[in-house]
Image (cartoon, rainbow, N blue to C red; front, side, top):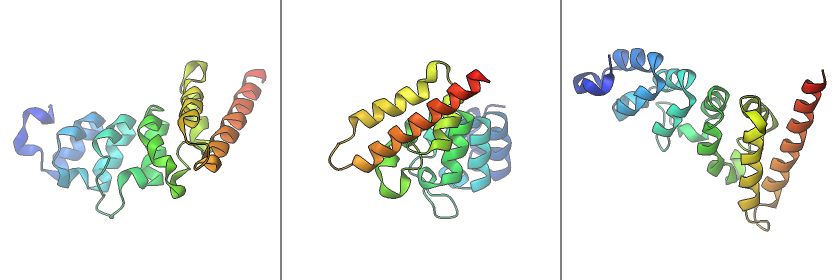
Length: 158
């Protein structure tokens, strides 16, 4: 069943949950009320990390913006490294450097890509930042990139 073809079910909690468990991107077609249900959102991300694009700007029933939730961000990136691209702009907020400047996040993202594409993205992102006002974030990103490269190199050797 494709939820978008049945508007009468788009505001149903249980059907919404079933839909996203089968296809995380189905969350796009659910009502805002159902998207705000933590279990529905989290299940969508477990199935497809890019479901995050349909949650940006929404607060969960817990009152936290999805893009500001460590659990949501980490889950999305672990499932699909390209979710990092959605979350990178939120890294410029002082409390959110954990997305693009976090070693663990970058390591999981890099392991999903060939040619370390996630690390290249992180470096390109750092290069676009203002070197005067975001110096600490740039340094954190570069430090994490260096550490992840070292970790991946060691894995290759072993």
